Length: 295
Figure (cartoon, rainbow, N blue to C red):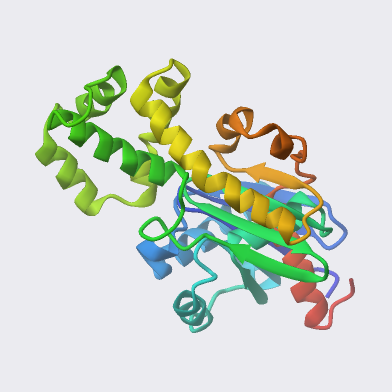
């Protein structure tokens, strides 16, 4: 068992990140791959995870044959959906053993080094996790169709809706709306064609436009960000009600939201002790122990 390896996977809607460590904590390697969005196709997401793990192993001089030595902790967006978890467990992966949690849980494990706290993932999607008072609670994270308010994907979708209203003359054609429309040559039809097949990460490519124009004072962009904050802050306050002693903000949108938080919430925000890949490794170590290996 001494030759076992621990793999931490952070599988999000935009990319998949993998870190491999030996049992004593020595870094073996890291790699980044494409989307691991299980809602866009579970088999494709799992193929990305395996391929990215192989690349991480390769950076440490190892190969595909070493996958069988790996205990993997997978943090995947959407793993909290029962049908996704059921389908996942029906697949065979080349690892020695696998643990599955939603990416919010592994992110929380990493952010507070296994201790108590609450995290908000503000990335392509959004999700929240609290580990406190001996319990673990998930909030949100149900995908952009019914949840994920304030995410990059949500901001992008709202940007398109705002631009279309401006094109119809129902809202002012601000510089922000003009910038969004320019991406599609000013064509409502082109926007609809894009949205018909777009994945969350595709919508998320428009989020920087929202932030850039909001920071310049564009009223339409400011309204979108304000609406997003109105959805995010109640989730942060709910985590405090559940006993979280501190909050960590993660994901690509987090640095842009933090300066806009209410002062009482901002005062409780701390820097994460580790990332979601470290949380995955913590899960992998737990899986290893459960399979009879040493701590």
